[in-house]
Length: 244
Image: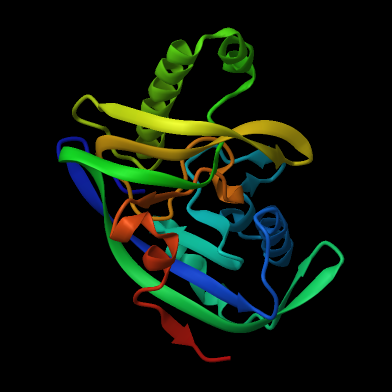
């Protein structure tokens, strides 16, 4: 557990694992990838986020994502320990499909999380699941201004929850501006409302981390708006290839 109660930010180690597969994958495959690896390593809660029959309610140390047709596994803090288990896969099974893994690539990073001096721009590159059963109906009944205000409050709450989940106490108020739109999405077979778009906050968020619900399944993935906000530019640097 990483703990800090006085500093404005902390440095968190992570490893970004990219699986180069024989065919492009779709966003929905992130959930299948999580299920596959969870079944391969049932003894390791970091892969499937269960302890016995109970869910582990903490910010996921291992997050599964499909970005630009490519599988990514983000292992942060304690999650780095499982990366050695990921270096020997020759195929993955997603539903009825067996897909060949041609190469594995890894990037080791130290990322800053915490309060920033100025506002920083970010983009949701996968749907952000901001709403839950408690606020969904209230959102639907609200006018556009109230909806935006609600989503801004939820975003700030997500940042505080994420920080708390890795042992960091946010020392100052978080300010946020948000510009998102609704998109239809599906979680575990259930249609839901997600959001994509941009936001700015006085807070540093590591690239490719998720905010909101079901971040381990790839939802709410955030990238910093740099190089024109190109996700390709964010993903294409500094990869270390692991030979198969």
